[in-house]
View 1: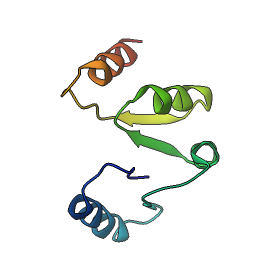
View 2 (view 1 turned 135 degrees about the vertical axis):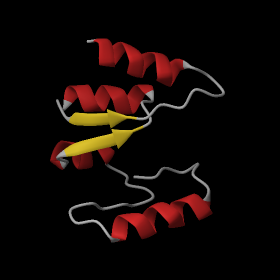
View 3 (view 1 turned 90 degrees about the vertical axis):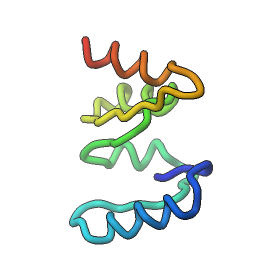
View 4 (view 1 turned 90 degrees about the horizontal axis):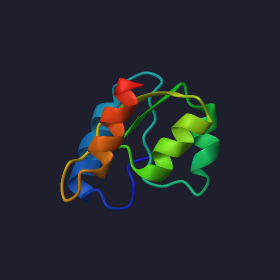
Length: 84
């Protein structure tokens, strides 16, 4: 789920790349994200608080690619998770 703030050009780029991969689906929005996470084999995420909590609560494998600007909170959260 690309999210509401990704630029349209970047969305198109991700969707084109994902279309060439098996077992990878990309959408821009879903009203019940928890249901998708529950069914997912794994999650690739930036590591925002809510998404991070969902990954933990559903005990999913994850690749966290945090942003570090304008704030470092995602980076700090990802680094602490890696340590654990």
